[in-house]
Image 1 (cartoon, rainbow, N blue to C red):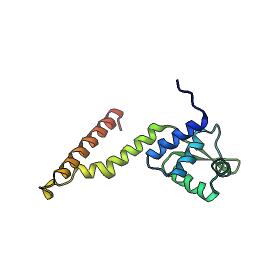
Image 2 (cartoon, one colour):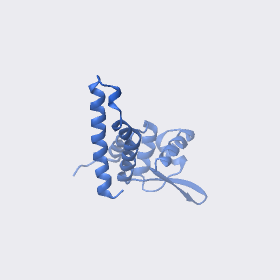
Image 3 (cartoon, rainbow, N blue to C red):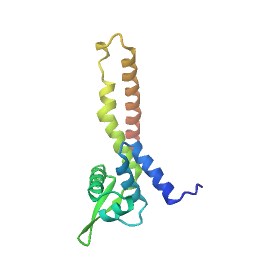
Image 4 (tube, one colour):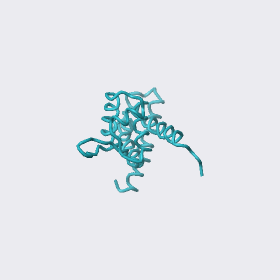
Length: 142
């Protein structure tokens, strides 16, 4: 078992979220919410992160859009809580990768590039990854 203090946990969560393509400030807001025992207001998040209120709202907007946090109405105030189900996050990213990048790359018409072996390799590898992800989806029944 690894003994980590809360700051180490926040750092690891920030790095995990950064690997998913989120910017530094959004990762920090997410990490703070992820380790919080209770939902937090925008003001509490701003105080904890040192970010301005408008910056926190910008981060929250992105996190809500990516289903990484949820907004909860509490005594006429909005509070925010992190979705720490990382599997949902990864599956959403995998689906996006499949639809936006791998599927189109796997359908490249290589006849247009008869002399370029790299484009054929890209197509083949994209198709391989796409099929791998598709098998995962089939196993999960999605």
